[in-house]
Image (cartoon, rainbow, N blue to C red; front, side):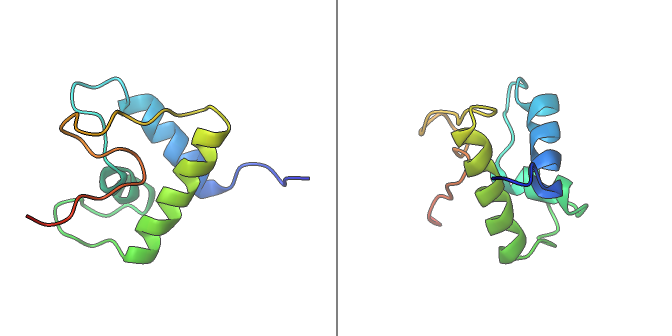
Length: 85
């Protein structure tokens, strides 16, 4: 039996609910910056933080609490990164 939602999942869910309806929906990096309280433009996040956020979002998606934006919408789908051009 699950122990419930962890703090990363709870923070991700809060951020997505607050910003998911914006014209430009948040990326996983935006969400990671919020969860770990770093500025998204400084690159101050670690890969481990990004992976933790992607894992949390995947769990929330399986529970039906968040929905990914379609690929090619101009924003990253939750849990995916584009290769550098």
